Image 1 (spheres, rainbow over the protein chains, first blue to last red):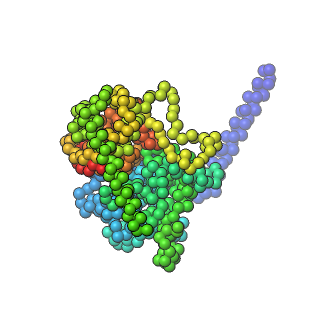
Image 2: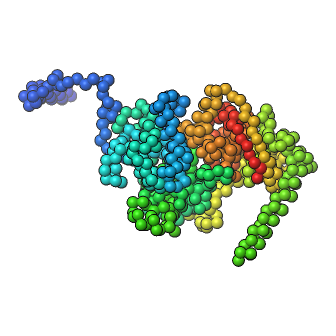
Image 3: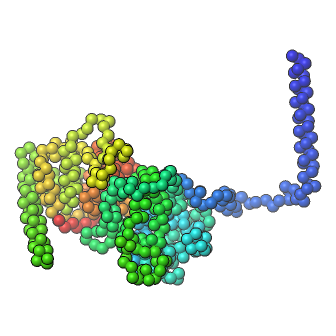
Length: 318
Length: 246
């Protein structure tokens, strides 16, 4: 017994010595290979390190926005509207906010349907996972798959007018675009430029099977028809113009070029936001199914398709 | 064809006019005088259905007819034994045939109130419709209640923007931009006594009231703090509102 213990200790000692020799060897070799040692590297000032640099982006943006739970404190809280400064800048913020929540009144001539910006960008563009402005603004200019080019925030706003609002894009130097940009910038106060923040865009969707429009119709009637109407044409105010609940189809809805006309985008919005007040009640597959049902309805043509189609075809495809 | 159409219109017009009038007069008699064991509604809900702010009795004047009728029906419903869950629509579609006429979600709903439930049970369906039609036909002008600046500011923030970071929607996104209510599903908040609004949210939180479509309000009420209730009720009691009777 005693002899065996001795052998073990000797072996361990030998191994330790070997390891120490190897380490010493590698440390001696290092300055020979590289021209710079650790001491020569410039020291980084931690205070000046950018937030987005501390967490390097190694994955695609859409893989980072996977937080389908509502956990308060995790999301950016934009400044309260009482904090809008009383200055020319503040006036622009107010104008942008007015356009945003009441597009039908403040940007009427650019809008071709019955929608407002805040119909999709819920709660004045503040709600996480409802494409909040504060998460979008810091990401621009960015490359867009849709147009295959790098677009600025202002150009992105123009697309909203063209497709989601089925209207005419205000020019880049117009007051409306300027005001909306200022409003978005004000909402994203304290978010560094280029940062991907939690709550950006919509929730992520995974499908387990191909969605069925027949199930979608069942889900629509059960969960959506109460507000958006059996016919999907929304509900109008009785005593004044405008919609209380926005139309999901028909001439007053978004056109076929809009992001909401993509089933996946629609489903990721529905999953995180609908029915209002009870988000995440529909499963991913249910959200996809109801969006297929919505996708099948009539709505204005994609203005990109052709001028003649838009001029001579009926407003909707039906 | 044209003559036929005009005739149809005339008949429809007559029906509408003659159908509602007697119902409203019957409702008025019930509301002002009561019948049998049911006392007059006006004794608590005010001479013109304007409600009672101090006691927290709600305003009824100018509310939606179908909303009022549903509330009375829900109050008349017996409370089921504890632990019984009422499903509006069968969840497992594989076990039930799906027919389009069956698809509308109807929640039976419960609204238990120690005072109102026995009274609602004393009303027949005809009387419920009559009294609802009467109160829906009344006009109403709100008297804004003053509140301090900070309460109103916080109430306005919750009413107009909700709490986006908590996933809580704004009140106005369903109850209409000025809190005037919309349709049969979304009752008005403006012009209601603050005590009534706070009581109702409390009841949703305790489960005494459970008759909202899709349980939307239940989900919202469960996220409100006591301070939220006070602020937002004060904000809506501070709104001006003019309602024309239907």
